[in-house]
Image 1 (tube, one colour):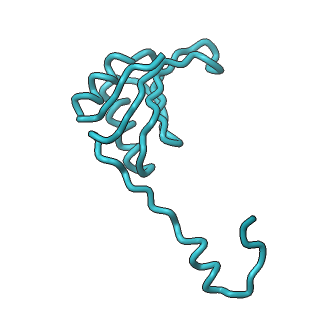
Image 2: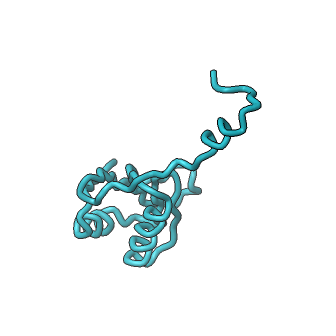
Length: 105
């Protein structure tokens, strides 16, 4: 169980310090490119899972992939969602950028 109450102000300042997530270099990332059809109204999306790093770097990679595929999408929680079936194209783009990526289900 964590701290419930304290009158020590220094203690609370340390607890609220933001956690900085360091982005792994592309060669150390292990990304999985898969297709998903569940809970999407019958539409297909391409998922890129396994990204370890900051939200800014995830958003940057997402923009690159969306731009090269000419499709919309989003990025959150270490996962990139691209609208449509672009598994092979995204896999080739990631490999050319130096990422370790493989095709999922």
